Image (cartoon, rainbow over all chains, first blue to last red):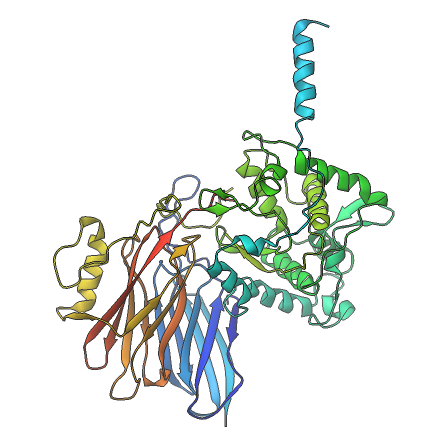
Length: 106
Length: 259
Length: 156
């Protein structure tokens, strides 16, 4: 699991649109580089970032090598009900990083 | 003495004397952030988007983790990471009493790691060492560095000052020639800074990673086409002490974001 | 000592020269060969449908000090209701080795069509954001960025 950082409110009013800001540490190896012997370094990037909220997918990002290392993704979601948000990052090596955050909706 | 010998002697004296005349620190110290673009400054100030905070997350996790043969965590001695070691980083680098040895935060962390946790030292620029160094440095955020430059630290400080003013490398440039004499001027796409260490450890866009001050000093050595020294070398430590003094009233602003 | 950085063929832009690239002419064939990858990516996204300029605001700095990481924000003028929302947001680079940079999938659950990320830019160029609406229409916006190179590129 890669290190992540998620900044989002802990509580929100029902119907409020909240902003969620995420970071994950990942080199996002593009596949264009060559090592010091001239051998190509294979692509290894986070290719998909998915967010579910109380079971429904509310946001998804498909990343390509043009996304910077240590990708920052910020998005919004409507506070519908108290529940867990699950954040999943998946990379080319099949590494899956999952984080959960609870949102209390009043 | 032969004519050749005399010539060589003159050249030798000339190179030793090739130091910039400046010995004072800047009257108005300017943080490294002032020489970055507005976007970079904005990113630095944004704790949700500044990638350096990823390393802080690691540091916090490590802080609580019992390690080594002693099975001890940092927290067990120092308390919670949010309140531990307030103001300590501001006093580094410092000479360990009775040893004459100058230690910076990184080597102090490794000293603890080896002697208190009885675990192997962290490698230079490892995620662990960077995370813990950042964590400890943040506990002095907003405070100016206050280092001791007399007593046993005096010869090390003098070494740092001499290095700052001595021409080096194939480019034959001294640090002070750029960072004292040409501050604010353009060097290709860059604005030359005062070379202050207030934002370090910092996330460098060129590295796409958080890095230590020594990593940046190695880049400076490479930039002037001088010999790149090891992490923790005596010369970089001496420079680190000099830079800590040179910052004067500048508050510690780590983690900076730099080009 | 090799650092982990991309080795895009970055071009040094002399300071003071505004080398703005021209946005790909969407819907017409008048695009330079060097933008062929971008043109192909845009054609794939369009899939025969027309693209209208508007509703999409793309925010990028005018000048990026390092092409390794450039902050990008896209906002789309959309009510994001069940009947009228942004389904997909595409970001296409004019000059990167791979034209498609990132793709966001949204729904009415987003509340607002506004996303941010950080992207890599190989050189000075125009970036295009295309919004695919729930009714199948396509809207786009562009922004141009000058990418400069640091003085001391050290690979360390």
